[in-house]
Image 1 (cartoon, rainbow, N blue to C red):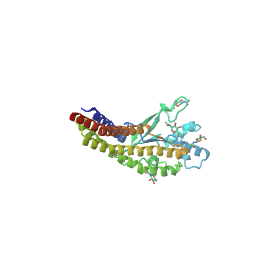
Image 2 (image 1 turned 120 degrees about the vertical axis):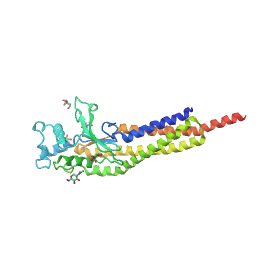
Image 3 (image 1 turned 90 degrees about the horizontal axis):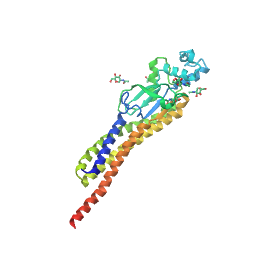
Image 4 (image 1 turned 135 degrees about the vertical axis):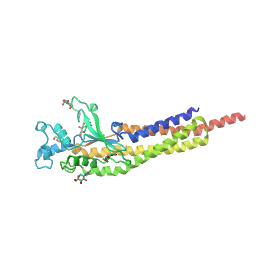
Length: 295
Ligand SMILES: *[C@@H]1O[C@H](CO)[C@@H](O)[C@H](O)[C@H]1NC(C)=O
Ligand SMILES: *[C@@H]1O[C@H](CO)[C@@H](O)[C@H](O)[C@H]1NC(C)=O
Ligand SMILES: *[C@@H]1O[C@H](CO)[C@@H](O)[C@H](O)[C@H]1NC(C)=O
Ligand SMILES: *[C@@H]1O[C@H](CO)[C@@H](O)[C@H](O)[C@H]1NC(C)=O
Ligand SMILES: *[C@@H]1O[C@H](CO)[C@@H](O)[C@H](O)[C@H]1NC(C)=O
């Protein structure tokens, strides 16, 4: 047993599990929903409607306003919630690598004096079908929801900003590339793990060299995948926040997902360092031993 070779095997195993979880987090209802790439908070999308219809009665949305019970028409927050519900739009939509999930905030949509933001939980209603090369497209998702209600209201009526779509379109290819890289990384980490197992029992310069090469490739794949998905998460949510705040749409990046993927990357980095050390010093140790035997 060589303990120095056990460490890479353990790191590869952990990295493999974490990469799998990155790929499959949120792939079905209730499975690691918190590990999303980003979340769209649409619970206040009705506020724009409330504001624009309060002033005028000839707005295309005034029919919607009439559906709001009189008793809550004075409370913008409550009325906005009711309008959002009428629109068939959920409180949140969270993007994962293979699909998106949606649902309601419980017990309430926004914090108040007695309810802090950390006490608000997501209750997932459902998830979309999983697809490879999935891309989170809020415009299509919201349009489908609006179409389903049959009220004849479009995203244009809600003054959905074109800039959000333009910004997100630029990230589409980045997101799809990151998905492909995750698949490649999982395959390479698996190869690195299998290659590390014989090294636990026997040392060899060639083996260490092969291990190092596979590990470098695996590290590059998972590192690049993590970098790209971080760009999607950070840039995507900042675009949505920049243009969406006017209509009450907010986005949050998925910090837990980012932690998961960067820990996997760090584990592959540790593996890489271990093999490099093994290659340099493991060799020298054998040489000293041989020299000692000679003299
Ligand atoms: C709606 O109006 C209220 C009060 O005038 C304002 O605080 C809020 O930001 C407005 N919301 C939107 C989405 O325009
Ligand atoms: C805060 O929200 C909760 C949940 O909707 C509600 O029960 C409570 O009355 C609210 N508190 C205030 C001060 O509005
Ligand atoms: C959702 O967004 C609104 C503003 O658009 C915010 O007031 C509310 O706190 C957010 N809710 C959660 C649970 O993040
Ligand atoms: C999801 O998959 C199911 C069965 O595989 C299918 O019946 C359904 O139409 C699909 N839904 C969408 C939105 O593609
Ligand atoms: C929603 O309905 C409009 C008009 O009926 C149609 O043009 C659009 O493609 C539909 N959108 C989706 C996502 O089904």
